[in-house]
Length: 364
Image (cartoon, rainbow, N blue to C red):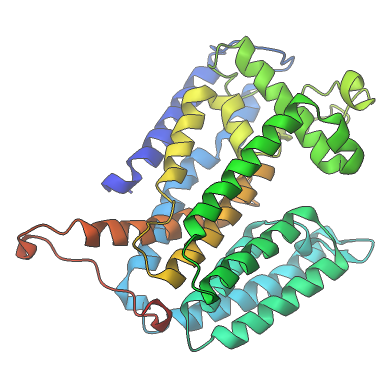
């Protein structure tokens, strides 16, 4: 957990814990918030205690050579557990919505982890590539047929896009990933300025934009400091924007309803500094240009899914998403660290033990 690569994530966690302590003494400005409950602080900030250990554990698994011999078999088991057992358990717990299985509509933990394992087999395992592609095509068709959910359609289309680029040997995958992030940023900013047209097309996204606009206003009112933990995340008054007085009843669980975005929730709770530290963590996940083409394409696809999950879900703050996001961060950082280490080998190699090469045939 204390390797140099994890220093930004360690700083992010420490910064958040400082905000937790200060929240207990109600040291932050209120902005537009009306409620304050010390009992909600630990639940709202629980992700700060598990994020660094989960990311570090993921890094260890991906880098440990002892798993190389049966890594593909483990990933196949993960795919089966994620999309079969995970879906069954999720349906038992939450039921179905109009006969639409809930696992098809979000990038929650088991869906995200299952996609990470399945796409690894597609991009980086020559032995299982054909079968994995077939499974992915079936999964995509099944998901879109049962539930035309925007987030998952974007996720599957993104994976197909980077896979096509890899097959055609187009080396602009990092450029396309940068444009993906830039486009998401521009669309978000434009949507926050006027969420009503988006709401008329997609109410689900329209609500999110209204909440994120509240976050921007709270940041402005607190001079970028944020409001800390223990308060509500939603202003819950939208009559002037979306022609509705409130989003939901302000019951006991109202303080635990987030903004449905890890980025904006981080801004709201920990201010501009916390948001910038999170951005630094993600920058250190960006695929290295000297990676093998198939490995780089896979990392580009997973980075795009990570941004999508954090952008439109509580990808860090909710335990339903944080495990998958942390495992993905660990994978991306381990791949980048491997490449950075190999590029920076010193002139006296006997002083440093080089990182082991990838064993997957797809990296050749």
